[in-house]
Image 1 (cartoon, rainbow, N blue to C red):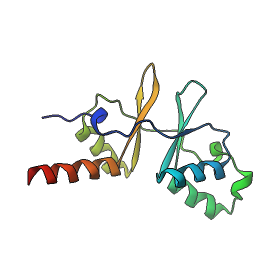
Image 2 (cartoon, one colour; image 1 turned 60 degrees about the vertical axis):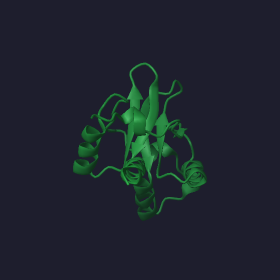
Image 3 (cartoon, helix red, strand yellow; image 1 turned 30 degrees about the vertical axis):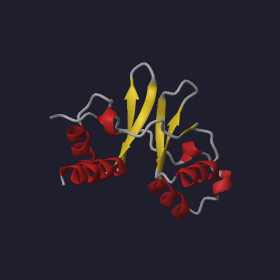
Length: 132
């Protein structure tokens, strides 16, 4: 039986604009206990993603967070999925590319969610419990 991304994805997703101060993005991630924020334009369409890994680069570059905006460190070549893709397809992409977060997009609505390794872990944990 195929399980689709829409069943596991986290929604709503935490978003920021490209000109958000990176400190504010970091605060949002800490407040929500998440490892990424999706960068969207004014109508909710994907522009990029900022992950915890990007903060390592920021620190290595010695950039002061208060003087830096999200667009300076976000990834813009983002691999996405849709709510109708199977979780096995997305898991294959995440494993082969080393991703922990994949935004879920809709052609008309823009970003509708995100699927993460945490979502997969929660699903597998629930499946194991229900099999007992």
